[in-house]
Length: 154
Image (cartoon, rainbow, N blue to C red; front, side, top):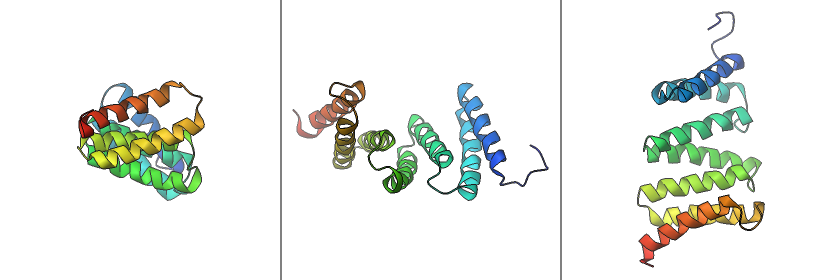
């Protein structure tokens, strides 16, 4: 990296972001995670917590943690993201997705009440944002149906 920039310069964060994208594309998830965590630290220091650059890194790290079956870590990242979105855009596609993803994590951890609450919140948001029959609504409905079958045996 360029030694002419301070270690926490936003441009260094951008380089790290792009490097993480490249590592992810090469399926080197471990390296992507390391550089995105560095990127997050820089972006949190350089920007407000609600800045889109911070939000993007949290989303990516949350997804990677989920894909690696690190559900508690994924929940922590999505929880942080949910707190940010509650302040900036509580009724948004991002919030609907975060709630769905948190529900999926809780489901994997067999925390069915928490999963039901998060997925129901996601469904409520999605039905207010999308037209009836939209594919993303059916994805959450299917997840809820699977949860109810497990929880209630129906």
